[in-house]
Image (cartoon, rainbow, N blue to C red; front, side, top):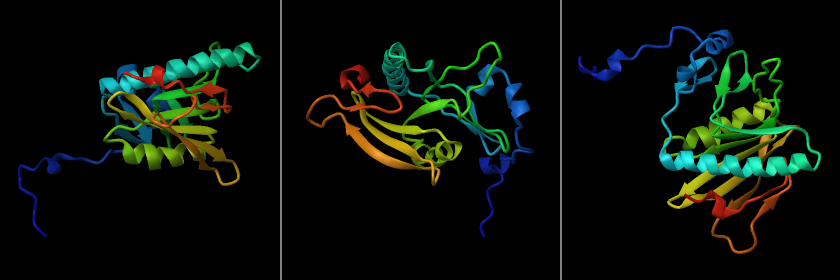
Length: 208
């Protein structure tokens, strides 16, 4: 086996000394917390999103928020939409993700309620070149095991959101089932869904 050169950067890598606990994470400053996720107690650094990624997330959040308000006007329970927000999936070992967009039941602000998997109705992740495996495999399993009912994987082209892959939780297996894929270039009327709330995908709203 060939030894590494003495000046190799790999020699400077040190293992994380201990798993991060929920209490330790909660005590972190916001500027640190928003730059990391915690997977099985270990820190995972989040790459800074590109401008296109941020724009797509904002457009998707705006679209979902508009439909959430329409659903509430028809009697649906209180709903909220947020981007890049802490979502606690598990306390032991700590599993904390920051979805690109999440639709969830309103939290009790007076009690300081934390956003957890049981509040989430829909999680949306936008695939970036470096996040393919995380978004399509790792998070697909994590969100399902945590009980999040619906999951969307969103892909971009040079003009905006181009593909939305939709998944629904099968409670018996606690795995996601693919329920369909919307593609921007498909002919016909704007696609729509009825769960977790009625949403019509207006592609023009999701362009850069």
